[in-house]
Length: 114
Length: 110
Image (cartoon, rainbow over all chains, first blue to last red; front, side, top):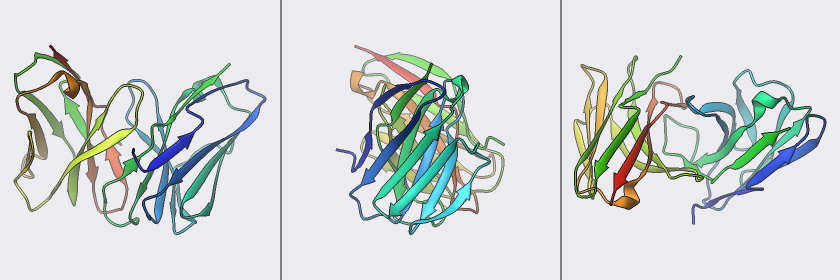
C-alpha cells in the first residue's frame, strides 16, 4: 500500500486520442508531482503542484496538460501524443514543496503510443 | 543537467553477499536520498542523509556521504533475492526539486 494510487496502470492509445491519467494520494501531503520515466534515462520532472497551485513546468510540451483540483488529486490530460511519449508516468507526493523532502510514488501508468 | 549518477549501472551478486552502489553528484546539496524501484512498480524512499551527516543506518542499509568528494554510497548487507531492484540516488540542491540518476540495477541470485 503506497498511499499514492495511479490509474490506469496501463494505457495504449493512438496519436489522435485524448486520455487522462489520474493520481490520488491519501497521505495528507500538499505537494504533488508528475514524472516521466523512459528507458536508460534519468527520471524527468514534468510538473509540480503545491497547495493546488502549479509551481513548476519543466518545458513540457503542451500536449501534456496537468490539472490539480485539490491537494489529494492530480490529473495529466493527454492529447495528440507522439511515439516518443511512450514511457512510465509516475505521480509522487511530499508533505510540502520544501527543500528536497522525501517523495512517495505511485506505481505509475505504463503508456504506449501507437 | 544530471546531478546524481550511480555506479555501477548493473550489479549481480549471490544471496548473502553485500552490495555496494555509489552515487556522484556535481553541485552542493542539502540532502541526498536513496530510492528502490522493483520491476513494474514505483519508487520507494529508503533513506535520507543530510549534507552535515556522514553516515546513516536503517536496518541492513548503510549510507555514507562525502561532501568533499561529492559522493555517496549505499551498502546493503546480507542481500536477499527480494533486494533485486533498481536503486536510485536523488539529490536536493537548494530548490525543492529532487534530481535523480539513471540508477543501478541490482540482481541478487538465490
